[in-house]
Length: 333
Image (tube, rainbow, N blue to C red; front, side, top):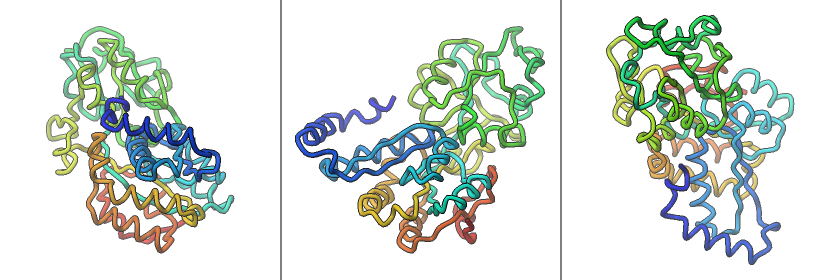
């Protein structure tokens, strides 16, 4: 997926790599990033362009440990930046406080968390929130295994489920939005921190159902089909328009980076964040996510400059937030 998205810079990247091989790479400063697989396409795009702009003088490493896995590393002081597909949790705040890690919270984009089916599925192209809840809630394990159990008009065939792993912010957000409680889910589904694995699972089975970030859907829309989500007013397909007008609910959500406040003392981290925020609208849209307003990106830079640490969120998954209103709240650690 990512190689297709970034094909236009491939030749330049090769040139930069050649440059790096002929210089003392080990002496170059490194920006260390890890976390959400959902946010990864955005950060990978920024990292590539930033390294090109720096002509190989700064390295950026980007891992995919999931939001929860990334925060574990971040709160141990191992990362400069963690990617997150949901806001920091109360427990993560406490861990970071114990280890003395302070952070600057930066919303970077909106994602339309996408429920996907196989293209040959012609019966569940629209699904109600309650139908999804019946499938995914903990009590469904061992009880709800068949499409017809959800709707008598649907086929008498076993549902094969695919979803984000337990360390994923996507898993937390989806369960909060659909089931009503974060991490409350049946456990008998194929789970992965790699969204490409989930895409391939849905693409290969007529009776599959899965969920993942919008970018992975849109890049593979010839292989899979998005479900229209009916939250009470009819089915709504994820798109730029439905995210912007607020109709794609409850699965439209902000995604973030958290910057280690101590790391902002390093010029390479400051430069990376500055490059990111100044080019965010273009790069976010390029990898098929939805940019925030310029005001938010400017505010992120101001928060870094002032070292405004903490979070304006509650410590739990919040569904249907107005990001600009939330950012006016007082931050807390």
